[in-house]
Every structure is written in C-alpha cells, then in structure tokens.
Length: 433
Image (cartoon, rainbow, N blue to C red; front, side, top):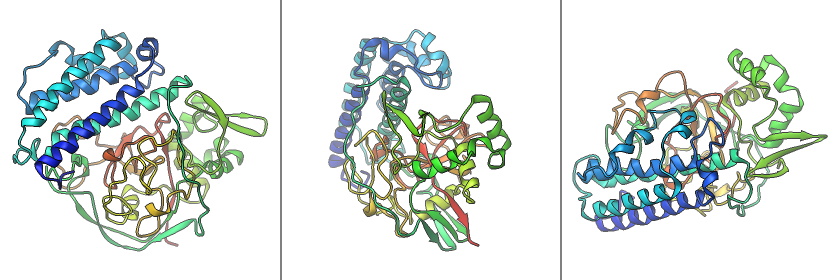
C-alpha cells in the first residue's frame, strides 16, 4: 500500500477499513449471550474484542494523529489489554453488544474524517505512508482471528462460514535443502514506515546460516497421527521436562479438539464433529507437542531465521504480488474455515521450493521472541518490547484465519509454548549430515 500516491493510498485504506469492520461485525453477529459469555479463561468475551478494536482506533488515530478529545475516556482502562487479564474481563462493566457497536461506529466515522484530512507525506512516523492506519488495520484483523479462536472454543455450530479449497498433491521430495550462506532477515530500519511492518520485524540485518533441510509442507494430520499411535504422548524420551510435566498434568493425549472413537479419530471444528482429515496440516498443537513430534521424527523445529530464509528473501515466498483473500498462492483470509491439504498451493512455493509457508497454520519455531540487533521501539512498548525474553516462542507464516494484510515473510507472532487454542501447526527441519 505504501507505494501508491496519497489519493490512491487513502482510497485503499478506506476500503480496507470497511472490509475489516465488515469482518469484525460478521464474527459478532450472534445473540447477546454468546457475545458476553466467556467461552474459555484463555479468551476474552467476544464483546470485549469488539469494543477494544474501536478503543484502539480512538487512541491512535483520533487522539494521537487527529488531536481529538477522548470520546469515552472512562472506558479506556476496561479495554487496556494490559490492565486486566482475559480471565477477569467478564466481571468488568463492559459495554454491551449494542453499545459496543454504536461506540465503534462513532469512532470509525471520525477516523475516516481524519484520513480525509491527514497528510500521508508528512515525515512524522505515524502519518508517513499512512502507518497509523496500517497499525489499526492489522490490529483489528488480529483480533478477528482471536474471535475465530473464541468461536472455535465455544463449540457453537452455525456461526462460522466454510468454503472451498483446492486439492492437495503429494510431494515428490518431502524435504528441501537450503544451502549455507548469508541472508537478510527482517525489513527496513529504525522506525521506517514502509511497508507497514511492526517494530519487532526491524531492522533488516545479515545472518549466516549453515546448510539445513526443511520440510516442504507443514506436518499433516496423518503424519502426526503416527506419533500419537506410536505412543508419543506416553514416552518422556521425546519431551522436554517442562513439556512432559504439562502434558501429564493436563492429560494431553492428542491435539486440542481431537477425540478417539474406536479406530477413528474425530475433531470438533466450529461446533461440527468430523473425522480428522489426513492430508491437512495438523493444527491446535502446542510448541511442546510440536517439539516432541520433531524429536520423535529424528528432526527438530526450525529456528525462525531458518524459516525466514526458506522463504527466499521476498515479501511473500512467491514474490511481491498481494495474495488477496482468494489468491492462488496461499490459504489466507478465511477463504475456508480450515487449513488446505498439503500441496494445494504449488504456485506459492518459495524460490527453494518450500510450500505453504504463508497461510494454513501458524508454524512454531525453535526461537524465543527476542529483539533484532539495533531494535528500536515504535510506536509503543506494549506491542513488542515487554514480551521479549525466554517466555514466548515465535510462530511464523499466518494461518487460514489470518488476513493477507496482517502477514508477510518477516511477520513475527509469539505465544506461550503451552498454547493450543490458536491455529498453530509446524514443520520440521534438520541440520546437514
């Protein structure tokens, strides 16, 4: 978006703002009980997410860029993601569904007024290239994906649409060799605002990696089931001690939402029970489960540097073309409510031949979430800086639920290694022999 002229860029931003709001309202088109109920202590009530995206827009676009007086300053603390943990949010005096919709609509009208008059050539980093609008767009799309995770946890059928996906195809060679050498990791520099990358993706820096092998496709349900059937969840050899303790304490025996009935494994997907499809990438697995599988398979998880190098140094593995929701390169933007079969997007392969790096499932890596050399915080510490350390593992690539505007080869996601409600899977790697 940053390469368009100011007028064209404003039109594109306005269209994207309309599209993301349509998505948010679709995921909250349910009865009030569904919206205000907490379906898991891991997640906020849907009505919290709905009002939160409007409050975030108000803070950054209206107040920071537009200089507008606060509309509802008394609710700021309710929608501060760091003020109250998710498990406590249902007890707060939140806006009800109708009031939340009215509030975010009022904010959005004023946001469009700010967009109309703002100078996108202003060197101010929030204004330049429309960065602040990219910030709120990506933020809302991220919460839309969170809403989908909440809807999955609710197990309520009929609320999430499905769609068609292309068929998969077997891989002639299951692994791809990535040669040793230096590559550029990350994007931009400092607080550069083109493209709309976050601070944790910056600055670009050169890294040398030894040669390695990486799976052509993410690990499928069929492959993961071999680990399950081989007693992988009952053998501590494959688990880190803290992962084994977590699995034992919680009785974890398979991916989240899987159950066994005789010889058949079933899963619950948005309230519908169905046999586990063998050729889809496995999802709803924790980092500990992914790591245990990789050890069982005689491999390991890739580092995030290895994952990014396998993308070939482009905005997307296939090049610079915007994937769009129904692009031929990747399964993004909720074109269907599930991952695509392995091998479904050969046109999306990286120059090395690695496929489905973008979309389908977030991919756990072996890396902790740490700042890059020369990192500069922008525009606020609570997006990235407060999470750095050895607490969160990095995920890459986006899922079927991720919007195309909220993912790229440099995008870094992170979560606790025990998390399974997110649409996460993985692929394996191994060092050269």
